[in-house]
Image (cartoon, rainbow, N blue to C red; front, side, top):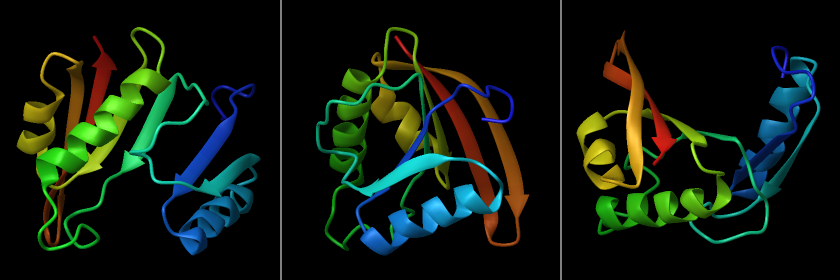
Length: 129
């Protein structure tokens, strides 16, 4: 928003407290936006040019939850929420799973890997195909 002052910032989380915390984070750095409780795998009417996502790293996915199913549901919803050539930025621990699931729907455009104390994290930038 500092780079694009007319940008409208929206944030969501499936936990209400996390959505409220995201709004406080926006306000703490002088940004305005809207946050709400929502499961990003569920369809909605809003449209975005860029979706930024800090994905669950397995902790919040239940033990028996399928990563592939979770990722596919998210990407399917994101696809309908983005214009042609819209983008998704994902912060992930394992890049391969996301790249594999993205398939022909999203093209990997860029990647940054950061070495952290607990191992590497990847920032993946996908473009809607």
